[in-house]
Length: 263
Image 1 (cartoon, rainbow, N blue to C red):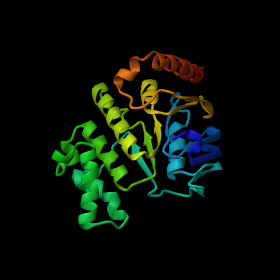
Image 2 (cartoon, rainbow, N blue to C red):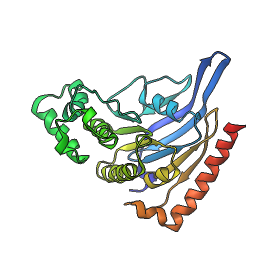
Image 3 (cartoon, rainbow, N blue to C red):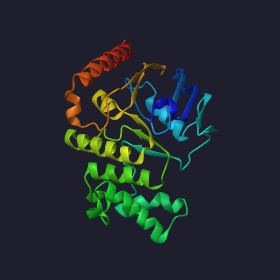
């Protein structure tokens, strides 16, 4: 389906965020405007401290903007909601619950219990290839497994928007690569609207339909780059000339912003 035929799923309208500090106010975000389309996979890169996570938290309803508004399905966001699932870098699993218990947790909050909750949970546990670890506790899982549980839990409540804040940032390169491929496969099947923050330019390109480059603080959108590389994408995609070309372009923009931070 052509992008122009899709409706706007999330609209960020002139959002600003200011935090108080000992030395006065800190402007984290300054005039953010962005339309995220239905089923679109958007990745975000930028130097540390540019407000990427702050923006995600505002979309998630975990914090309020100081000015401007964010809409999901034309409704102003005024707090958290089950239509928006969040996956953080830190797995945020309940240590006293098993894999199955963690995935079922959000379902129970929605009032889905018993056999129905179990069937839904098992569907997504199988999706992330953890059916052999259903009764394991988080302490018995590797970092990659824990993140798979977090992703399964987010998908289980059937959000229409998936917000991911560097979910693979703490993982080793091999596990990170594997989870990138699994996430892409899942996205192509489920077609959730995804907003994915990363420090890794390769990751941003391999996953996203468009890459949002943010400027150094105060956080603004410097540029939006369309990634015109067809899916399915694999790690071999990173060897394509068009991938390397767009990687060099985005990296030059990100590095320029990084140098601004160091001044």
